[in-house]
Image (tube, rainbow, N blue to C red; front, side):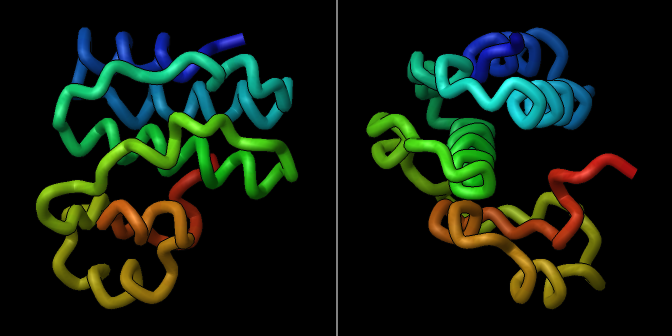
Length: 117
């Protein structure tokens, strides 16, 4: 089972491939449905990746009907809004489709963000 903290370490070591590590965590969490994978808080670095990891964990807990750890609520939002796709023409769609745990932290994603293609 891949933990969120391990995912954070992998992203820090190889930031170029952050989406691969994030999706590996998402797939693993959906498979095992074990909150132990997110029980230990991530290290807050002040980076927008903190907000992305916390939003993802919160979203998955809501999706799977699991109790989320209290530490997730203290992870601050991004300092400036982050449109993860980086594509100007997807901003309006991302504003409309972003799930609440992402919006709270000023992260905007499209509907299929946490799905494999």
